[in-house]
Length: 108
Image: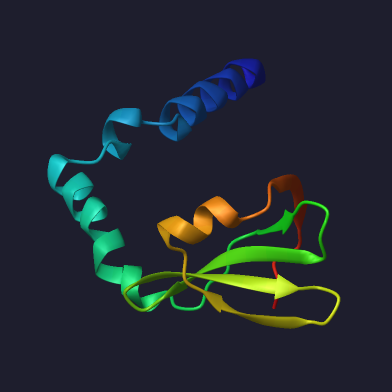
């Protein structure tokens, strides 16, 4: 008798606690609302830096950070700790040294 109650308890528990994927599925309106969230909040995330990339065989690295209306590229000289935003134009892209695959921590 105790075994039957125990088995019945576990069966009922499994049925009640089993995941219900059909109930977790979002509606089309949920997905459309979620797609609009990025556009709605994109401008609020300002000065968020991305991972830095070292410029090969130099003491320089660069990173991109978000600014109001887009992104800004910042070039840093690690030896002198000087940094500043740099605008990237088609002419300056060809003069950039070859970058390495080394990554550093995101500068603060």
